[in-house]
Length: 180
Figure 1: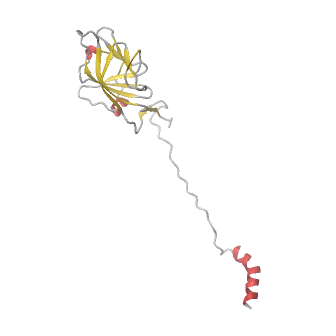
Figure 2 (figure 1 turned 90 degrees about the horizontal axis):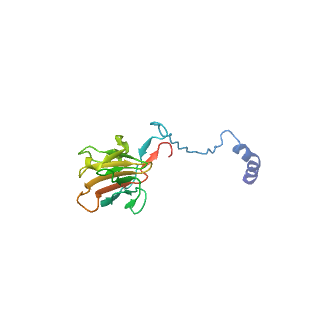
Figure 3 (figure 1 turned 180 degrees about the horizontal axis):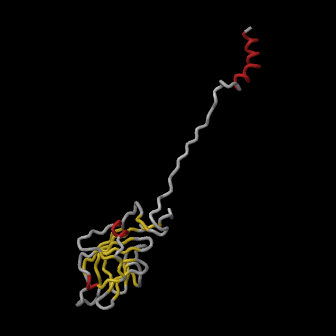
């Protein structure tokens, strides 16, 4: 009898049990992770420092007249021509940036990536006579940030006129908002 009952239940009862309203329903679980869009803090070309940028430090750089320091080329060394940080022999000497901005920090103000990326007291050029050892300058272009600390000014009695400075460079530290 057990065999006949099992056969009948298996033949007639199984579909009824499987399709019954009390049958267990299998539900798939889907996990959705949503990331809110970045908040807009200004126009699309607003610049901000990147979160994790390791600085490149170079000390006691001697740069003569009509030379420049590039923030994007290796090795970090003065090159002839114009670039991110220039030294020219106009008058007593002048420094500027081709395609970037220069900010002279206040005496006692400590330069950093955040300070240089946010300070907007831009100057087109600075006379070397306006500088003293210890002066810090921020030089910012479309992608890179440089902090220049003047160590020594050109000696007018020396046969070669050159600046001595330390440079800290943060490559790819500036990015346009909305491009990430």
